[in-house]
Image 1 (cartoon, rainbow over the protein chains, first blue to last red):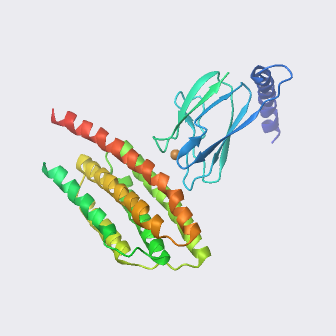
Image 2: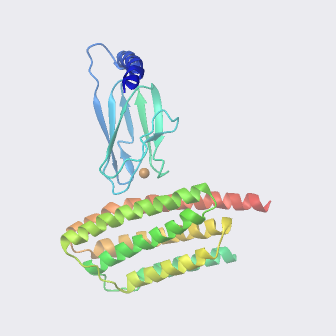
Image 3: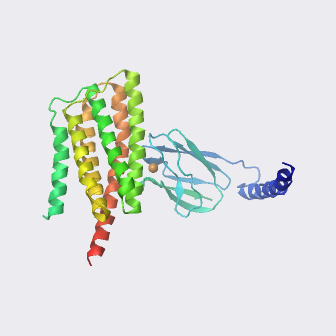
Length: 116
Length: 181
Ligand SMILES: [Cu+2]
């Protein structure tokens, strides 16, 4: 038990530092707070299919269909894995650029998130 | 027209006939039975294909059919229970069941690439036929607003599955041509 705690402490510290650095880098501008965006997965489509956000913003996919879906970036920068009907998944936009994504289950479902 | 084309045209015309049989239009309890049976036969075919498919893409598609059609049937069952509608077997649902049984019997005889082709070909014909039925018979005939809304809600999944099946068929054709060279 004690060994466990000791082993975990440095890792937690590293994680905290990493998060602090990421947090600083992810903030789009001083004094600007991160925004929340929602993409509905509905009728086998991503709505809206294209979305532009700033670094550090949070994008949440909500599955309103009766079947599971995923939001999987073509470049593998993010992957929700299966989002159950009624379920959600949130991605904090970190990778700048235009991220094309698709549903790994249904190849006809495509979307794009542009991160500035 | 070669044998393969003739066979698939026959499968398709049989599937379409299944739905043309009822001139009057089904009642809500009959629609409920048609929806549940339509989903169930595709779940059964999907389960067989998950274990027998040669191509990884075909196996993944089959698994998706099982998951998605189970999702649709879960919603349909919940709705009919809530509405206290008892699904009523009818000529269309029985024909669907028979078509599904015949498809399974045929698929069980096949292996490898021939299995993949036959399964995917039938999936294209099946989703085309069910979409026609949804548009021309089931949605127009549904009396209960929630039942009608459920049919409207599930329609896009059938469209996406049909497109996916067509893409698979095209890639299997490609593999078939390469194999013959
Ligand atoms: Cu999907």
